[in-house]
Length: 350
Ligand code: AQP
Image 1 (tube, rainbow, N blue to C red):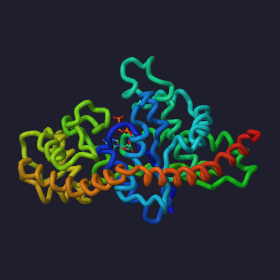
Image 2: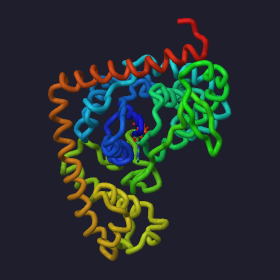
Image 3: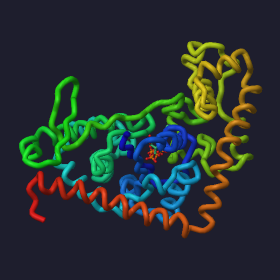
Image 4: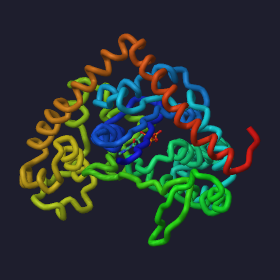
């Protein structure tokens, strides 16, 4: 049984990239595992301090989780700021992480832009809070899109350094676990998390530019399919999606250097639960004038029940609020166990 953790920021409309890279995989992982899914509202402050719609965005992400099929009774759905242990552990991890590690984070470089002096300290420390989100539950598996891979490597570095630096303290308690790192057995407190990055679309690209990731912050709404888009919007955006003049190849090699074509094929494969090879076996040799309508039908078929359910859930927020309240209590109880153990390991008087 895996202990699965992941989170989504309440910053703008969820899009197909968030769905295929993350939420859909959250749903698939529920069977047989213990899953904790979080609306990471503290992270939302890192790039922009004031959000007029933080409350509604938080509810909307939770609604997207539920509408996509996450069972909030069997698993935990909650929002990060309601569990203060995340921020508490993040402080400890700020003291574990090294500046040299943080300086390598490409997401910080991308999001800080040219005027780095004006970026918040929170944006810089983002990966340390993310490590805390995961490790405050001692989670072992984290489903994310490919853009988060580097942050998960940092999470492993932080866990490893803590385990080694506090090894003698951990041994004096009963809280340690035996793990293997490479082939080496290590008596540790934190597990080494495994990123779960996969499927045919781990990185969904913009519909306007196949070399850029589909993103909430892209100024062009035509660049992404939002989870709340209706049939007309989905159809318009896919019809207008950038393509090249050639038809679809029959083999994967034929997608090389054709980022837009590759992106649409990957999206189709992910939505249809097929491999890209299977999609090309079906559509190879066809023009986009044939492929795009098929993609529109498929996207509408998969997304419209989720959109409908999200709208229904958002029309009366009491249900979502009750789910979050319940999730927050359960998450707090679990995070509290970790923090009590850690205080003992570190030697904090409590
Ligand atoms: N384009 C994408 N393809 C696949 N997975 C993606 N994810 C995001 N974009 C893609 C995955 O969605 C999860 C939640 O992301 P997030 O809300 O925490 O933050 P983000 O990665 O910053 O999302 P955006 O849309 O890209 O926002 P901005 O525009 O602010 O940068 C994560 O698992 C992420 O990997």
